[in-house]
Amino acid sequence: MAEITASMVKELREKTGAGMMDCKSALNESGGDMEAAVDWLRTKGLAKAAKKAGRVAAEGLIGVVASGNAGAVVEVNSETDFVARNEQFQKMVSDIASVALANDGDFDKLVAAEYPGASKSVKDYVTEMVGTIGENMNVRRAGYISVSEGAVAAYVHNQVVPGLGKIGVLVGLESAGDKTKLAELGRQIAMHIAATNPLATRKEELDPAVVERERNVLIAEAKESGRPDNIIEKMVEGRIRKFFEEVVLLSQAFVVNPDDTVEKAVKAAEADIGAPINVVGFVRFALGEGIEKEESDFAAEVAAARG
Image (cartoon, helix red, strand yellow):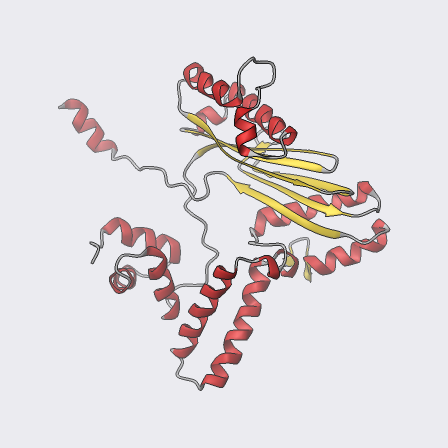
């Protein structure tokens, strides 16, 4: 069995909000598997259902650019937030977002493409900037969305300069209706996505493994109640519907008007926009999601430096 360390217990507490001893028990029961430990706590009613995001630790910026029927978003990481406030770094991220748009968000094409105004690739330009600024940095990922007719709307949360911030969202709306009104609706939906972090546009687009895992946890949780199987089945189906309402964009309560779902809000907007609207999809990048920054022990570093 894997050794259960204090840092593992701490991480599980941060993920679930459960008590220290409960977290330790969960890790022991799951052999140190963090995700299995989360599920164990949930089946015992000790942790809430979670759309768990990884701890956000990396610095840098999200760059977003949208033009007409297409948009791109990139994440460029740096070691410190200080560099993210550097004008050279900000210009570089903006330029890289534009290159991503020109290359349909294809990451391999992006890093190999020529950097604007330089006779070198994006990858080589970033390497050069590492030497100039004096801090490690890298292009982590790129996303892209387009529509055949309609609008791609963008939103940047915690914006430091136009198009750059900590969370970037693109949403594609297909429609033959009024483009100005469509773009405004798209911006509202993009703001909603930034706030709620849905997992998919429609429930049919959810990863089946995610749904199956959720169902298994809910079944185990319901069985703890000791109720008959037919009652448990109804309980689980009701909770799965609630899960969809929490993680599926079109099923979520619209932050602009919580009395409506996003789907109902889009349908209601069709009369004003003058044509049917199809939410094609979205891209949402949050800075550093899924990355763990190595934590240093400052006191130990000082002691080591002193010999």
